[in-house]
Length: 337
Image (cartoon, one colour):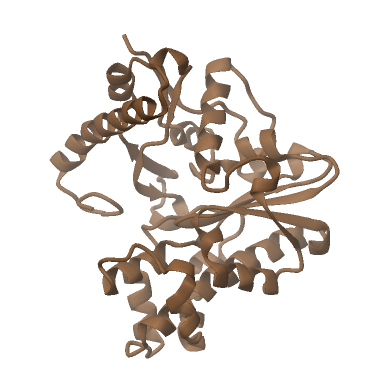
């Protein structure tokens, strides 16, 4: 927390954490392999995303003459040396260098794993931040759409932790279900320029923070709101911004929402109120990603494994930078010796 999403930090903290996180991740890998009774020789490679400490696309920093930027820590060399396993890490820098924003990266794995000729699909990920990949049934890479939509679970979880230190999230939306959506607050939350920026775009917790909500509470004269009403409103905020992003992008692509199937993954799929509202807001078909043979909770890890494999195999993909998708292999390779 000393460096996460902070504009000003003690630089020594960042340097130390870069090494420490790499070491901790290596120890976690070894612990899991021991638990699963798998030897390191049986593992081809580790794909390590690391910990994002700051994501700064141009739409966030708004500094003339400066490019998109992002930073993840947890050095891959430390993981490779301590585990004895080839490690691929730092995936986002190549995306930025090739003209992207460094996020979202899910499209690369989504296209390879989930593209289907007989179905228009939206692979929706509701993590801390929400994003989706549209995969047309014709599998034409130039028609693929990938974008962040805004907040996912991060604001809901942050306020649950603030009010209930023993809780990490609103389990089964039990508290949000007891509340009512505050329309004045909802409109204030949706008033940020991020939602006016053109697609595709990316964002992070640098924008969608506790301060973001506190500012909206003040502007909407809603500071006395109950925690139940606040959580209901934040849940609705996530639902509406996802739905509106889907509607806008599909309309711009002349796609019929009724002919699209949404496969949702990430922690948000365990929020029944959020999923109920998404189904009410969008006329798409909703199906469980488990039907495709993948765990929704493991999907992001699987996608980074795909990225690492493509880099090690020298693969490449033919996407369209106009859609914010550079055709590149991503990640730096760290050898154990």
